[in-house]
Length: 226
Image (cartoon, rainbow, N blue to C red; front, side, top):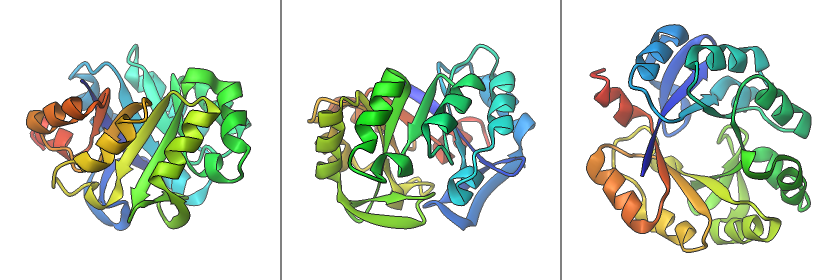
């Protein structure tokens, strides 16, 4: 089980939100300062989300390049405001190893296959789940696409890895939605779990249902003593 620390960005700050609500900021620290604390733990991978880019639909490539520089040799998976192939390529060129896309993948029926063909295993499909359906545009909008249907589309298009977030548990330290992750893992896709993950016991539970990795946000703050 791979533990991936999360660094969420608003402006020049690392932040943590509760349930993706931009009005509920649980933590705020200058980006460089927080990044150095995360890098000091020597993770295998860092999860970077540009919340500002996700909300506004505007890619901030310069911020991603700065994060890659701060990360040094540690690879990044990046999301937020990546809504075209050109934007995805720009993020990879800026130093990311993986790009996580949600909104762009569900815009039209052919989009998934197009992105898979162009990006291969550097693409991670975001399944951001609220009330059983996918949320997009920084979680500010909901679709009518259910989890099972989204998983089927991912498999049919050749997606290999999905990033599954239980939005209602994000930033709450309430524990992971094991039923949700178990359903997606049963599809055979590689699953990165996020939302409510607190400690090593939760990581063990996620590994038991088949997840390959887990992104930890607020729980990771606790590990840092924050």
